[in-house]
Image (cartoon, rainbow over all chains, first blue to last red):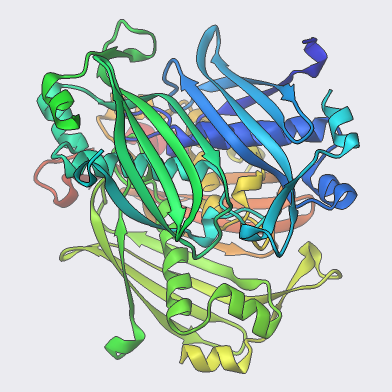
Length: 140
Length: 140
Length: 140
Length: 140
C-alpha cells in the first residue's frame, strides 16, 4: 500500500487518559482509533456530514474491533498513529491502526465499519446497508 | 460453565456515553468490559489492591481485546453484562463478555489479560510475569 | 427541603475513572453530575425523549457548572450522590449535587440548565427558550 | 497580563466528545481544561514528573472548578484554548481558561489547584500543602 493511502496523526497522551498504574487506560486507544478513522475519512473528502447528506446514512458504525497492546504508553507521551484502509467488501471496510512512540510499537488494532441508515422497523432503529459506490471508490 | 462462574452486572447507558448518532460511542463498551473484569476479580477476592499486595504486581493489564457489535444501545437502556473466565494459560487469562438488552444481544467481546510487574530495565518500565498460582486457582 | 424532592444514586468508582495519582480524574465528577440530573428528571417523568417530544427541545443543556472537591475518591469506592433542584427561574433551573462516601463529603457541585431548541439562525444552531410551564411545575 | 504568560492550545472536537444532541458533552470541557493546565505547567518547566520529584507531591490537584458555556461546539470544530494563571495564594493557584471557535466564545472556566502530598494519617490519604516557592515563582 502506497504512502499516500496512509493517514498519520499525532496523539498526546493526557493525564486523565492514564489509570492508577500510570499507563493509558486501554479504552482510550479505541477512542483514538475512532478519531483516526474520522480524520482518514475527512482527508478523503468524506466527513460525517457529507456522508450523511450524500448517502442518507446516520454514520459509518462499528461491526467488529480489536487491538493488541505491546508496550505501555504514559502521560505526556506523544504517539504517532498510522491508519489505512484494509479489507474492503460490498458492505464493510476495515481501518487498520498502528500506534508508535519513536521506534516502539505501542499497539495495533482494527475497526470493521459499515454504513448504517435509520430504519424504524429494524431492531434498534438502524440497519446496515451496502457501501455506496462513491464511498467505496474513495476508500480504494 | 456453571452459573457460579459467571459474573452478572447491570450497565445503565448514560447520555454522555452516546454519540451524535444517538447510540453508544463504542469505546465505552470497552470501559464497561474493564469494569466487569474488575468486578469479576473482586467477586473472587482479588481486588486490585490485594493483587498488588500479595503478588507484587502493578495490575492485570491488557494484551489483546476485541468486540463485535450486533445491535445498537441507546441512552437510558439498561444492559445486562455477563462475564466469565475463558482460556487460561501460564501467563494469561481471558475474560469473555456478552452484553444484552432483554433478549437482544448488543455486543460480545474478550480481554486477554496478564500480570505486569514494575521493571526499570524493561521497555516501558513494566514486564509481563507468569500468573501467580493463587491467581490461577482463583480463576479456575 | 423534603426527602421526596431529593434524588439519591450510588456511584461506583471504576479503575478507569482514576488517574495516575490514584484518585478520581475530576471531569468524571461532572459526568456523574450529568447522570444524576438525567436520573432526577426521569424520576419526575421527564426523560430526554419526553422533553424532546412534548416541548420540541433538543435538551436541557448546561449554562453554568461548578464543583468543589473536599476529599479524594479512589477505585472501588462507592459514593452516595444526593441531587436536588435548587434555584428555578423563568429560563433556568439549578441542580445541586453532593457526593459522600459514608460520612465523608467528597464533592459538591451545581449545574445551571436551560431548555434549548434548534434554530438555524442562532449562532451554533441552538437557542435557549423559556422553561415550559409543565417542566417548571415538575421541578417544583 | 502579557502575551507571554498565556498558553494557547488547539482542541479538535471528536465524534465521541459529542452527545446525542450533537454538541460537546460538557464534562469533556473540563477534560480539556485539565490538559491545558498540564500543558501550561509543562511550558514553564513544571511537568508532573518534575513536580513530584522536586517537591515530593503527588500532584497539583483540584480544589474548585467551574465553567460557563456560551455557545455550543460540535464534531470537527477546532477550538482555540487560551489559559493563564489567575489568582495566586500561599496554598493555591487558579488557572483561567477561555475557549473560542474563531470569534465566537464557546466557554470560559477556572480551576483552583493546590499541591497535595501523600499522608497516611489524612482522610483519603492525601493532604494539601503550601505551594513550594519554586512553583510559586514559576507561576508568576
